[in-house]
Image 1: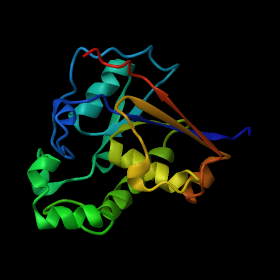
Image 2: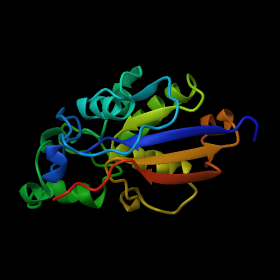
Image 3: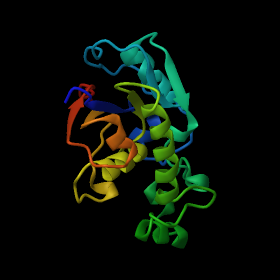
Length: 199
């Protein structure tokens, strides 16, 4: 395991839209302040992630002034005209019900299907892993679920993966080449960087 390759995926801290259970894919809103986080992660020289504000702010809260390299390819799924709407507001729309039945292939009006999300995120992910030796990537629930489904040897479907805000997934492969070839990781673990918010 001398050349073992490890990737760490972190979901951003929550925003008001998240707590209101809205679709906020490309909606660029800040994280909620006042949340407690655990100690920073080890020695880190750079962090990668989505270019959206909530990921950049999460990087600053956890890693301080460490350089943050952003990519629009690591954004959440675009929900198009459904951005900032809730299930309750959309549940009577036929297009929404069709999307719930086949989110793999059907896209929200003006947005992306899950298949389109996976292509974009995988491209951004491969760009990161070719430029760093244990990359840390701060991104969103959708991209993390897509990457877990692709690289973890598990039969879970996309929405079966529980990816809370502030969760950190560490995936390990024998070497970098196995990642680039799309092979399953040899192991993975999950930790939670965020203490539960006091209600």
